[in-house]
Image (cartoon, rainbow, N blue to C red; front, side, top):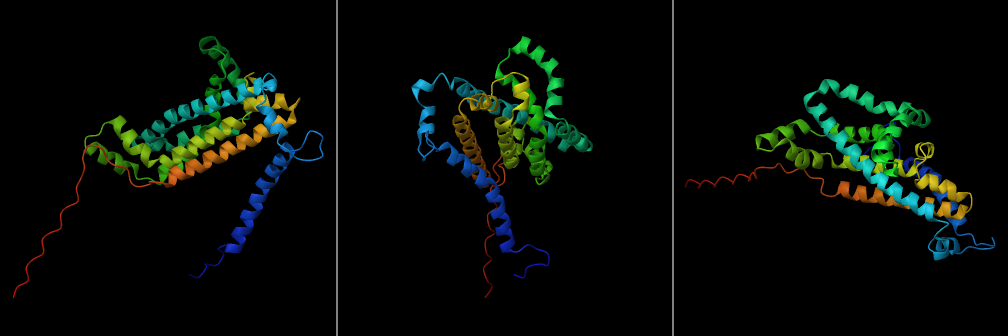
Length: 286
């Protein structure tokens, strides 16, 4: 096949991938080397890694364990909150109110233009009420994080929504006797699976890396606990940052695996349509 004029060649693509890979690999390799540095600085060992699990260091790393637990809970609650509120809204607007697609996109993209510190100033009075009603647990940050990740989740779902003939699928489902909830769960969700997984992954990544909102609202999360621990033990902070990166890479691999496996068309509920039997061959005339 003849390569078109202006199309990048294989060598150029490999060079770009190598440069991008080096940008990510060099800092990670430096973090690994730093975490393996021995206590006397003359060699490398696993002393700092094993110190995290040592019973005598449990009190020193208690805030770190609390921050990791809170961030994992926040990631799960934020992902569920964003998907439950955003996806049905986008589907209804896409199917019944197409004139509102642009206004909805504008509203979802507004948080990108607002700095995190300004967002905290606006959310502080809200959280004073939330603290009196629902307590001051770290899980309440899911409300603020949901606003923060809304633009990224919207773009991920919108890209999959634009490439799917959702109107035909939902009309066929209703014709076969499917209700609104069944259509959403058995037709819409499988059709938008890749977009939903991408939105969930982006949400987890943003929640695990967010610091400003949690710090200004006095909540203990992974990033705030890393900053606190790094003042006394920088090795533990680097090790936890490496583990967070590893978790993000594993999530990316799982999402890519699930998104590429079984990406067939969704099954319409209510009726199984059998393929018509082939017509019998006519007997040839003598």
